[in-house]
Length: 93
Length: 113
Image (cartoon, rainbow over all chains, first blue to last red; front, top):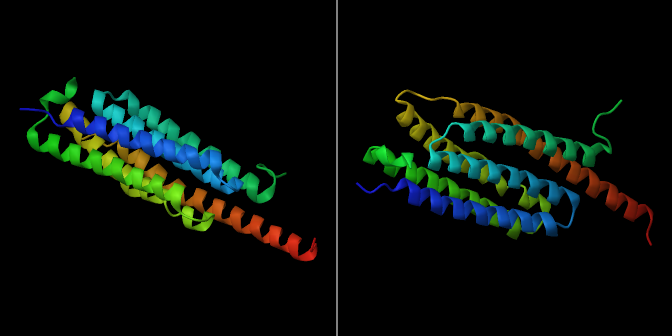
């Protein structure tokens, strides 16, 4: 039996790397600051999907924890930057 | 490589799920690059946030459950977290964009040069 999963995960990693490159282009080129924050958030989600794909390929459970940490810190960073753009400071007195 | 001892149906199903998730993420990022302004662009990565991530997480649940020979539900944590937090980021970003554009136009209207 030929296993199809290693081939599929390799193709998926190529597609996700291309998606990360496109998000990075938008991050460098975005006309306003909100575009850059949005591109950074998309880059976080793409890297989380990349780590999950690596976990499927290697069959290890450690990649799940890395993906959960990336999701957590990505949300905190994006929410802090959006709050800064909205109000001018992150934690208001 | 530990992916050799999967049964055939799980192998093909996980492959289809991983490939469709990656392609949906790629479509979302292409939309992020190509759409014209911020309020159109903010719709594009949600495709990868919801359906792309969901497909990859389903494949991960499938492969991990077959490897461990029991149901592994830890990936549902990531799904719940992303479903709860992605709209918060989107709402904050749209409000920031509307606020900054409104202050820019009011500054331009009150200050004509």
